Length: 312
Image (tube, rainbow, N blue to C red):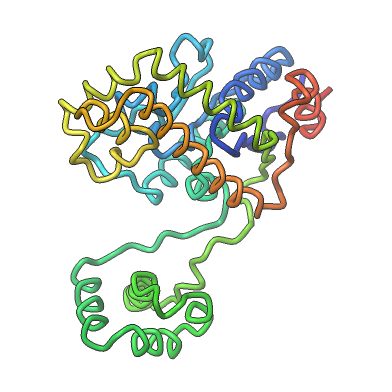
């Protein structure tokens, strides 16, 4: 029997509608047949919210097949999602899963959340008073002088941040003032905090676009509009982050009579395709990801995943 403590964390990452959730369940089942208990952790910024199920493609209780899932339904709509908070929660869950002699499988397409979970990355705190003071200075002195100030204390960050990106300049100066550390020192390194195997499922973009259109139609057929109508009653339009989830504004526009249902489907599909391309750009930068060919089929990809884990 394979000792799960000897196995790396498994992360199934990549583009929306690529089949990450389904593959993670198949992989967990295959590992379970080999005596390795698995638990799944979501790395999706919007699946954190209770009630946002259909539009975020959240795996239902029935679909989970008894496999424990974590970091789903942990926030109320009015709460603000925070990648720093997610990192703390995720690391705690990973330790708890390991303590149960099980294998953590991280699944998601929110790039920064994935990196926060897996990599050595710091999230310095903030101070509203310091931020407001530096912001006021920026308004008075202008972007060039503020960028010059940053170059004096943190030349590496200044080289990376354009003067016109005032928000990032202010943040870098805030971090330096609060911590005494250069903002560049807090930048993520492609260095795992624990041994990890990252798997991605790759599709030709034309095929992925078809999958997105099909999934959009299924969401609308299975109650996405009704879900959003209920969430509107709970204050979704005024939430700090939940309302930004792909597709939800389009449905709210439909409910307000601004667009037709056909236009709603078109908008959701378009926004999802745009998201997929952003994710593709993000994840393609990480050379550590082992890409599986979506068109190769389930069994071929499971076999490769098990081989990469050193399991036959």
